[in-house]
Image: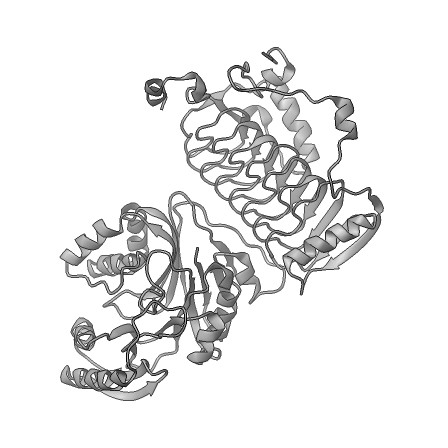
Length: 280
Length: 313
């Protein structure tokens, strides 16, 4: 049985659980990690730059073109005239500077592992869904399900986001400069969400684990979400992370509200059916 | 899935027919079965514009029962007779398709009496009856319907539209959106989502004398709003009430002679993207629809859960 209690991250409200029952944690071998590579991942040179004019190209062909350019070693790709098309930039599994000059539709930058993406406009629903690693910065607003089920990386929206941001999130960080809608962090399992503005109803409903920091007002908390005390570690982390996120907003971090799981609903495996009803 | 879109020009008219056609065509992937437009034009002074159909489009893909087209002419004659019987005068009549007609009529009496008379003719359905509203819906995508009904040069202040993926009822004109809020002139509704307390509400409204033509859950919104307006509520108040009384996941748009409104359910489960400026408001299920009429860089956002907004033309 693995235990990570006593680790600094535990103090910050991250993965507090003592792993029992069917749950397992596999610690990654660093050597294995170094030598790990994906099929269709490429060695690219960030100084090699090119552009794609997406105006008259379908999204599938735009993604094929990105892949083709990466295979030729291009490490910086600028997408012009994206026109809010859906599913642009999905499945990028290596380091890449991707610059989107305009807005994306639904499911943009989904299932990526490693790229550094900057979007000058807005994104539609489910931006960066299932992201494993990398950094995605959205300069304007985002639709609902922002960062759904991400497992790692930094996802930043400088404007406001819709409902259910970070739903089913399993790691990584989501930072929002503006407001967020209902059910933010719904069934979140790990990672951190930072909302500098106000948040809608049912924040962190059915939260398993992870931490949510809110700078503004919270309309209501969801089932099993509870307020926790801000620590110095939290404040240090927030200062550092917001600098990385390039959000130029004066924030009194100590006054932010920290939300974690009450863990009454958490881990159904350990509860009898009658106890589950009681927990809800 | 379905797609909805709307546009309103503040203080001036534009080619809303052409704009709505572009917006709805770019949402075709959300619903290819039928397309509908509710366009608000300059009107015909004090006369009413009546859009009605006496049969269904029975082309490939429809679930409507095929009829011999020869019955349409007889039904139209019967409608003309009914209009004359209630004291209305037909100034202009136009046959758009074998089964669909546009009339300009003058009438001073009760609109409900007129509507009931017209719809007493077999298989006849009023699509709209208003002083500026023209409601057109048919099988096919936005371009097919716009071409069929010559909508590409329709001048007006605002419009709403719908591309339908049939899930709850058949592929026919009757189940296509928008819905006219019978019997109120110039009120129309489009909807994306599902209403889960449709039958309870329908039974209650039917008991109050309200009429339903289809078994499409979206029609409930139009009838609900009509009932509340009848009781004296203003549009925004009625829309706020709908969020409490209608259960399910939905986003809908409603238009009147000089207003366009939107409402989003309390779960924010259905999409809506909004662009707002001093001159223009455009909104749609996907931003790609707004981009089809505004290709330059613009700021858009998603309205939040439980939000109701109304704009003036």
